[in-house]
Length: 306
Image (cartoon, rainbow, N blue to C red; front, side):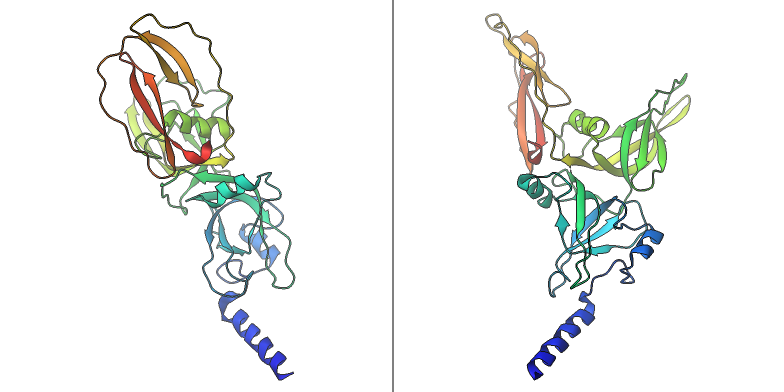
């Protein structure tokens, strides 16, 4: 009997020492207060950032994740784990998500676990950032789309891009999106832009004035990170039946925004630089013959997107 009392006392001491489930800075766990503060709840899905809980105590009270609504002042909420049952992700897709350097999830709080009063995050969509890129996860996050219908302008700049802040629906008129440099010097800018405009990728970055034109300054969203939806949908590239190039010439190619190689011209090989880039960790090298001398063109593509 004394042993049972002692174990119960130790357990209560551990819970009382800071390992109790929390939903924000004040340790609130009331769902109605979460709704009032605009924090994630069981009633709606939300875009969230995520970080591991490194506290040491009894699972699931510790060792789960801290999540925070993006583009919001809401405090972090503790979740005991990630439930992918609503996401449609298979085991390989879930592993791709969990290996991410930076991650954005869309989801809602799951049912309460009555013994310890914790909840999982029910993940509906996952977005993985470009490997090796470290962006401020407390910055502003956007979905970006082209304006429809297009605005007719008589003088530049013409703001035909709309950036919408996540979770708030605050909209910004933009001239253009700049993704140059996200993922390194050999990142495929055309592919990155296409993921954002055509495939629902998320960007974080800053809006500032660009070049000055007769109608005023450009409004440019410069991305510091691009989060691609997992899994990346592979495009079936066309297959071409080509006649052989004339003697002494070789075929060159152009790579489109979906990373498909299309035949260009037959050219005579010329002098090319003896150079091959080394892609960073998490990337793989792609190459194809290009240009007037059939020199190699290169791109470093995120490995997780293949």
